[in-house]
Image (tube, rainbow, N blue to C red; front, side):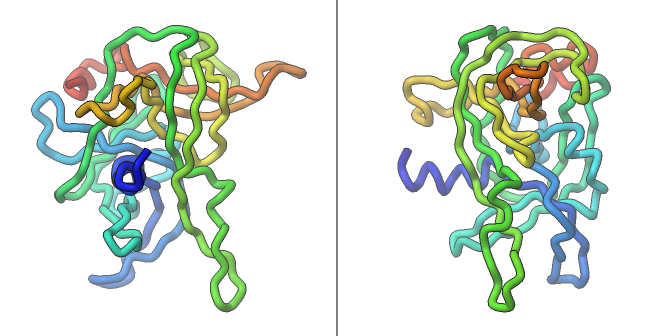
Length: 237
């Protein structure tokens, strides 16, 4: 991956924050909530949309939440979350962002994927959130984009303890808390050479399935996300 590709990713896969507006020009960070990704315009949607996990969106209030984009100077700039739509049965949600110019290459894939599919994931794990120390010795929040990859271990169409929904991929690689809402992008030989990145799932968490089992991750399957939410059909390219 080139440095340009990596810089671009910071404005496609973005951190989700709880914020408080203290003045016309000042936004105070009130806490990190998770990860989201910008969705390429589809189905006639002109407004900028981001996808995240439902349990991330449930922490947010429109007008008191933002996603962060990295400017050319390296500083983070907020874009307000103006609306939130929770999926009725699965752990995904839509964030409606304030108008602006956004870069988006992620599209939702209709392909019914199965075990062995290789995927790429970028997200903002909490494990690296506090790596920066201010002059007075206080740890500062600094979201940093982390890459992981893996493969689908199996499809699950059932309830899982502690995870909302019923249609999942079990994943070979846990990404860690904070990565909820990150896209599972189907791995292809060209990686970023094509115009669209095919999102097959949304990362929602990890756990030990049973005592002694491997630690695994889980993602919501995207291909049939409109099965019980017809209006979500418009999100597919």
